[in-house]
Image 1 (tube, one colour):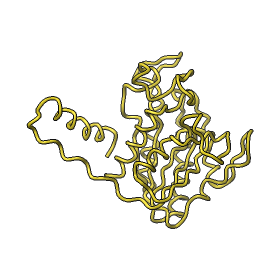
Image 2 (tube, one colour):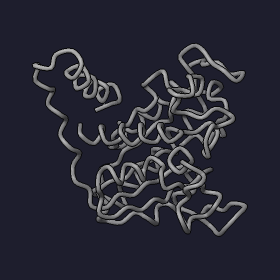
Image 3 (tube, helix red, strand yellow):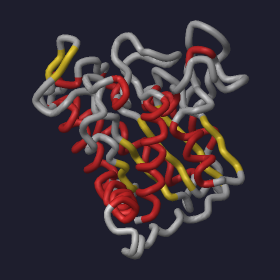
Amino acid sequence: MRAATLRHAIVPLALAAVIAPTTAAATPPPPPPAVHRYVALGDSGAAVGSLDRLQPGSPPYCARAQDNYPSVLARTLNVAEFADASCSGAKTADMTAPQYGRDGGPNPAQFDALTPDTDLVTLTLGANDIGVFNVNVITDEQLATVRRNVGAVLDGIHQRAPHATVVLTTYLRYFPENAGCYGFTDQGGQQRLTDTLRETALTHDARFADNFRTTGHDMCAPAEARWVNGPRPGSASVPLHANAAGQEYLAAVVAATLRD
C-alpha cells in the first residue's frame, strides 16, 4: 500500500463522521504483520529527528534521534527487538565498514546489526553517494551510481538477513511540483531519484515506500502543514529534513507498505 492508498484509507473514516452518521464506517485496514526483530539502516533521511532527543550512546555526528521514523515505526509495530544503525552522512560503503565523524567514536558498520532472525529491515540511502544537495541537477551517471550501489546494499541485506522483509524508501518531497522557494525550483530531479530507487527495489526483491508522492507538505508549505524543514527550522530539528510530523508520516507510509 503506497502513500496514495494510505490517504484512501483515512479519508472515508473522516467522511463517515461528518457527512452521514448512519453510514457504516469503512472497514479499517488490516494491521501490519507482527515483527520480532527490526533493523533500521540508512543516512540522515532515517537517522535524524529532534536534536534534543538523540539516542543515548550513539555517536553525536549521527544525530540519531529517538523520534526518527524508524523509532516511530518500531513503536507503531510494537516490535520485540529494535536496532537502529542509521547515521547522518552515511554512504553505501558505511554498510560494511565503520563510519567516522568529528565527535565521538566510530559508528559500526551498519550491516553488523543484521542477524539471521531479523524479519524487517528499512533502508533510506543513496543521496550521499552522489553528493546531492540540489536534487534538480542529478545526472544520468549519478542515477546509475545510485542504482548500482543501493542494489548492492539490498543484495547484502538479503544475504545477512535471508528471512527479512526489506523496505527501501525514497526521500521526502522538498519542493512543490514545478515551483519552489529559498532560491530553488522543482525541475524533476527528485522525481527521477525516486523513480530510480523504485526500480532498484523492484529488481532487488525489496518493497518500496514512496513518501515522495504526497504533495502540499514540502518546505515551501505553510509552517502548520510542513513536513520538511526549511533552512531555519522552527523547532530543535535538522534543516532540510523531516520534522516531527514528517517522521510520523514516513513511519505511516512504511507501515502501509507492509500491509500490501
